[in-house]
Image 1 (cartoon, rainbow, N blue to C red):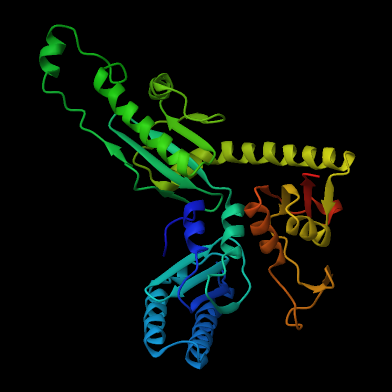
Image 2: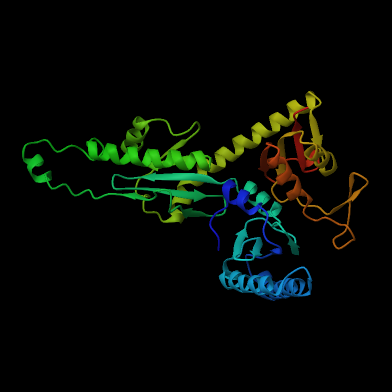
Amino acid sequence: MDPALSSDVLAKLRQPRPYPAVSLLMPTHRREPDNAQDPVRLRNLVAAAEKAVQDDPAVTRERRADVMDQLGRAVAEIDLAHAEDGLVIFVAPGEHHVWTVARTVPERVVLADTFLTRNLVAAQAAEQPSWALAVAADRVSLWSGSPERTTEHTGDGFPLTRSLEDPDAEREERVGDLPSTFQDEATRQFLREAHTALRAVLASAPRPLYVIGEPAALALLEDTGPLQPGAVPLHHGGLARGPATAVQEAVEPARVAREAAAAATVMAELDAARGRREFAGGIDEVWRAAREGRVRLLAVEDHYRTVVRDEGGHLEPAEPGEPEARDDMVDEIVERALDTGAEVQFVRDDTLLDMDRIAAALRY
């Protein structure tokens, strides 16, 4: 499986590839008995992709062999026992990528010169990812979190570790000059290094931040300098080594409170936009506004999906499988809104019931 999604990763995935760049998407299931069908559906999807590559006269023999090899490697990485709601596989000459995402995706095989990224973009936006920094005197760890899962971020200098053994501790204790753990200069320098490493991560991947540790540790880290506006301190020691489940449990109440506050802000923004007549509601109005780059704030219910077709510039309801039916229009709108600099917020189901489940505050 590939690492967690980020804006940099998505930007690289959007770049053109040598033909064919093959995108395979499949809805998956977390629990029995529904997940029993996933291995069969995956085999059928892979067979469809292989046939599409084999039958395409634009694909050379050399590239066909390369893509088939990469597809086999991708499938070998998949663990359906730990599936979420969607599986995304990208394969091209010389590369393959696999993600399991907490958002359903339509079943699809697409051959093009770019990967079909809109479902990944929407999944990453829906995850509302955050960072949690767990601080101790001898270890500072960084955790990537979402409502679904938390994993330790190992990279960009993390985790930072050091030994607390002091060769001069016995002498200093005899003369009464042994400083406390969070007052000595070595600890200050250690946390300064952690502060610098974290700021670099936040610059490249900005997210909400939770800082976890004993009060003395958090106070010393705060003395080092500001991290980012809105960082939430959580007084909870002993989590610098995890486990991930304990970090997620420590963060969850603060995350839920942040989510509720964000939803209230979104609703206030939409109401104000209505008053200014800078509002779009429903899939058709929002789609047109997104195409024109007018969306400033997009709000979408967590599990809202709908099947539509384009009828002369307007979207009309459609049935799955109908000719020209598009079953991931919501994800396409999310990607378009992000591409044009809009803020995207996913809210709980039924929050936007009177707005047809998707709404936008417009720039004009």
